[in-house]
Amino acid sequence: MPSAIEAIYIILIAGELTIGIWGNGFIVLVNCIDWLKRRDISLIDIILISLAISRICLLCVISLDGFFMLLFPGTYGNSVLVSIVNVVWTFANNSSLWFTSCLSIFYLLKIANISHPFFFWLKLKINKVMLAILLGSFLISLIISVPKNDDMWYHLFKVSHEENITWEFKVSKIPGTFKQLTLNLGGRVPFILCLISFFLLLFSLVRHTKQIQLHATGFRDPSTEAHMRAIKAVIIFLLLLIVYYPVFLVMTSSALIPQGKLVLMIGDIVTVIFPSSHSFILIMGNSKLREAFLKMLRFVKGFLRRRKPFVP
Image (cartoon, rainbow, N blue to C red):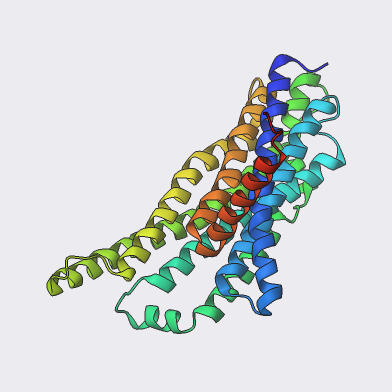
């Protein structure tokens, strides 16, 4: 029988999981349907589909880890299933972060105007450059998630059999925890790339605004609006990541923290917010997805209105 805290945890995780999978699944579905209709797919659609799929995997693996912790507390942390979950979690987490940085780089190359030969070359080759970055992001995430030699990590932290059993059990968790922390520290690189994209977009906007002021038009042109939308999108991602990433690292080391189960439960609830909420931010920031989303809402509203019983 789950406790009150565990019941609240299950309800919150189930709700966040439903919202997150629905939002990310909507992104995949709309873009795939558009792909089948037009027999062609744009670069931004490829990035969004890749990002949404990685987010769905991340949501599922976080929820699976939490439910497994509650249902099988006796074997949690020592089973093969948990090891598999950790590998998939590492891959989904890193691919989600890298694909989001790809989106920020795409905004930068597509919108910003920076008078540098290398940047101009990147803009001309944007399709090939972004596809190469996407493929590289996938490969980096895959390489990071490949399990290392456990024996090597174990011998580095091995303890004698004469020591207290409880202490030995805790120390035995150190190799896997330390390895997991080391692997997930790679998430700082996508964050830095997004930060660089933000500052370059801001620099491009300031430069463009000065040029507009010289012409004294008094109105914001489409380029200014595009800059503002891209900067807002990157800022929101950076703010979400600032909350998500420290909590994620604390969760990774929860095996070494007192009340680690409670820490893991709170961490699960907080970390799921990032991939769940960001999907709707992406939907509202994309004209095609926003139009499809509003059309679906109108359909649901009309359907519910027709189903409402008539009261004379």
